[in-house]
Length: 607
Image (cartoon, rainbow, N blue to C red; front, top):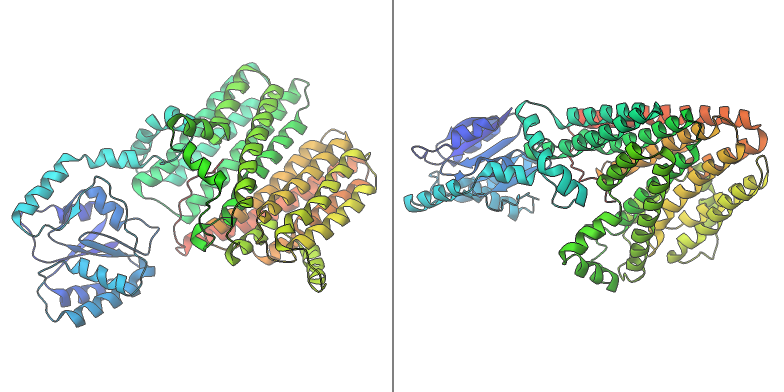
């Protein structure tokens, strides 16, 4: 339950009490500031509380934005201020200070606005939502009240609410082919009490059914799979729009939305591979390659963003590349072209769905690999140019995030401690260049040597050494954000190549399962960092061996075991990794949700 304390003289005919009750508030009245402070103290500390001026005139959605968003401890709009449990102490302190300095009990001006000024003076971080055309005001006289009421009548707040449910920045396909009607589906869900998490789950189930249809290997199954994949994407858009429409943000919801997106896409890849196998075409290598490429693309996005967080002190990018990008974004048609060529989730899923229905899995994967490769080259090249022209140094926060994303295990940590003792160290900007030779030689050795060769093992040892050298010092160099995606490409690529070299039934599906389990661990790390929840616990990273430990283990298994035995070993390893990371991840996110961790909202993948 939430409590709203109305302060000041009630206005005849005002709808403020009814508006607050419609938003779930229990309304109480305070005749003066002293009584308001008393009522504030009586509200349980684990509940939201709001101070609202009784003369408030405005849209209900303005009140909703200002008083019910779960993401912020403190929030305010003109004439109203609210605090969640995490912000109650600051609100209570500001109220007490305002009363002690006020010298009076009659509420002539807005107590809520005075308390807000006190919060600002205390340095408290108060969220002020962008209201746009919405009205929120405390009129000082009858004429101003009539003008404010007319302004409220002139703007349809439901239309504003519906429009704001759609992301401000999205892909072409999503913007023009999905959002024009999915927003109404989101409103339909909200009016029936459905939650974003329920819609997210429905999207996952729809995608899994689509994958099962693709696995039949029939033309009818492929057509049904394509249609259901689009339906799943519609629901995927709807859950975020529902969260924005009803302000139902949560830590668990953001994690489910992001995690299920990956599960849906990669499960669909597996379904296509199974369907192709039924028709006598083995495309498991293509399916695994698509997953590796797409995951590496995401890690590039995450690492670059973490290394260039302006809010963390990294500074704005004033490079010529950034300036050109800004100019292109100012021209309408170039904006949409640039958003389409990076193959975001909407365009990607639409392409997969259409090609599944009309062609074969092999053609679908060829097109997907070509499109993702071009998009990866385009975005990575642009980011490298921006980084090389950037003058700001990396921050400690960014270096810590990149180190967490690197996923170094006990072997790399031990080697890094030894390397730190050396008198000479490569410069900070050379971390990526230190890691690159070992990663390249590892993949080349696995690709060029026959199955069972010991050379990939030697290359994996060198890889462990170079990767340790790369993380021995903080990742603050211009190109050090490339270190985590390089590690992902080396580990996943080695598993893919060795499984292909084994050339036995089941090796590539087992490798697909192993990479999917490890990728889940890496995505989970990203979402924890994004949600300000910190990296996964050290025991988890160590128990999984880190990227270098797993890579060395896989090369040793390939050198010592026969191809059928190697397949069994990959399967066992995939199951073990999946069980460990899933159990710990689910435990963490459910616990974070239950203890009321700060709500977050993920606007989706950047590419």
